[in-house]
Length: 327
Ligand code: PBG
Ligand code: ZN
Image (cartoon, rainbow, N blue to C red; front, side):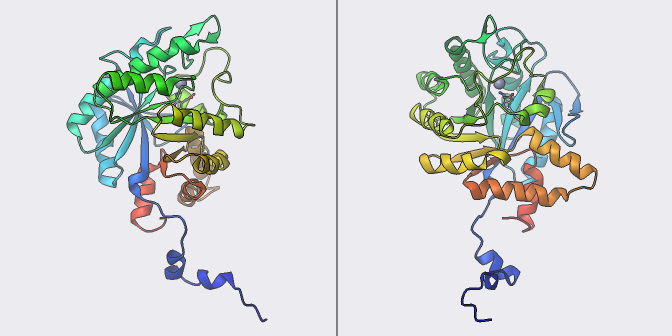
């Protein structure tokens, strides 16, 4: 055979395969989503997310230590409050669960980078991401509460805030509130392209945040839409988002690529709770190779254009990166 071009030449051994690798990853781009809850002396496994736990603050440090030892430098806090009400008041309470977690974590592990999810759904009795007027989620009335929440997180020590509510105008509202209070340098990572997805199911179980009626389709995006995702990303960049996120990751890789092309800010991808749960369930049956599936999912998000990857597998991925199985 007289073949001039033989792609296999570049796949002949490990050295050459590594040399020509197009996607390179680094532990510093990993963010670990972590659940902190009110109460004492509890570490509760999340039933649909084996290996993931809800920590009371007296146990949070054990996990932060393991992350830090693994070289995962960033965490994103989600709070599970003791009480919920219609206005989600624990979201912006000075002694709310996330605010207390931040103060303690910053003291015990000052070297980590702390990001907070800013939303109402973990704190509202009805489980929606904003305040209600009848059965509608009121956009403009929610903005002030989101801004208050973000400010209280930053005052408690958050290094970055990440609004996940999908209200219109929330990035600008938060940016203004932070600036007015002297936090001009605190970045905002927007959950900009966030779909109304079944891939958040296990998270809602973990946080007890499933809506008590209806769904999130009036604020989260329709999975059929791609150009609308571009609109959302551009709007958030205009409003001052420093980083934009696509969520979920695995089934929205096209959106990672599109958002990367149309913006000039870093793009993050969130591998959600159900992505994790599905892998765990299949692996528990010995139907898939968990580590290889996990690595391939991560690689595909980075290959699509993500620079930052949020994953419940952060610690395990960091290990694979250290040992050269991925990267
Ligand atoms: C809060 C929020 C959710 C997730 C991140 N922030 C749940 C939701 O929107 O219902 C999902 C995370 C995951 O599934 O891992 N709005
Ligand atoms: Zn929410």
